[in-house]
Image (cartoon, rainbow, N blue to C red; front, side):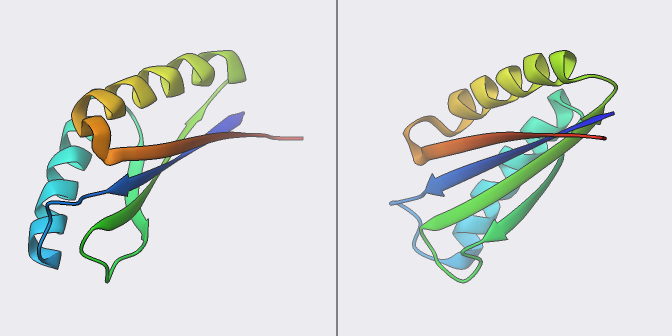
Length: 96
């Protein structure tokens, strides 16, 4: 069993309230969830208007399959968020 964790660092320079930020994040999360089998949550910067960090996790039988899924997930995140996606990090965890 393998686990993949994707961290997305987001900057929303045009957001002027937490309500506006959450609306943008919820739309992005819903679009990603509809295409991929990932659990997604806001992990950091909850009280900042223009910053966000999302975490996404998925579990699969082997790392090779999760590598492909995570590449597709990151590519779609880049497409949805565009220049708002500042950076991302992908980590794999293996059952020993």
